[in-house]
Picture: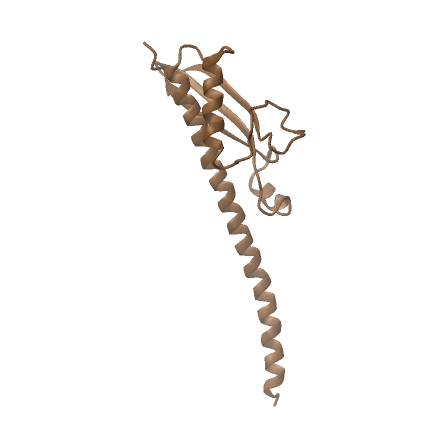
Length: 161
């Protein structure tokens, strides 16, 4: 018959194995939650830009109306990425400055059924809490993933008289 000291050693080994598994699951939950938060912010920023676009004369041409839409998107994303600074459209694959998160803000005049309006689509470089350590895991669930770029889009009906 074995004594209790042998059983205590087995309990320590079992605890160590389970602790690693629990920490991996916890890290995955935290990472997924942060990605989900960013998704909501990005979609709401696109919605805010579309709302401003629907109230202006012609936001599709460069000018003050176009700048107002981009400013609304940046102001909304400032809560998530406080180091945004000035809007600088950049190549998403090679931003030199890490604060250049907004890759593009596209404004289109579109029609949904018989309703004319504006669609605002934004592309933003996202952050990951644990860096690229879990990229292989997320690639399993999102084939054709574009890397660390998340896209948000929204449509608002034209409200100009």
